[in-house]
Image 1 (cartoon, rainbow, N blue to C red):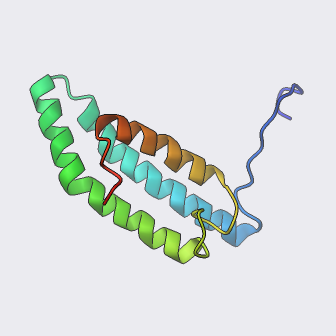
Image 2 (image 1 turned 90 degrees about the vertical axis):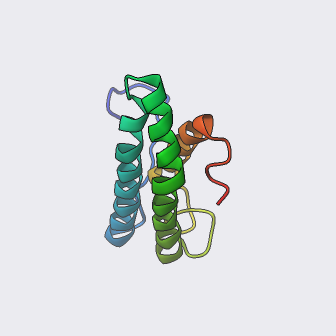
Amino acid sequence: MTLDQIPVLEFEAGKDNFEQAKVDAVADTIRDLAVAFVPNRRAPDEVKREELLKKFFADELPKHLQNFEVLAKLCGNGGSFFVGNHLTWADSLFNDLGEILLNFDENCLNN
């Protein structure tokens, strides 16, 4: 425990080094999506921001979602998680970013 206090929640990054590398790959891909999204969200001009977000959701997001589908097929064993058959911090990270995206466009993950 970092501060010798409870409660503590610890996430494993994977059962072995190979699974940990897969989790890192998923997390890096999630970061790529966040890096592509955030500047659009923070544009100072409201009209420009709306244009950028519309373009992001139409053009960029589908490409990123395809990357997640590929990773899920390669690493997820056909289950509900990105890596293996258990929850990792990358799954939680994707959930958090997904919620943010859904706040801007409630249908963005339907494709």
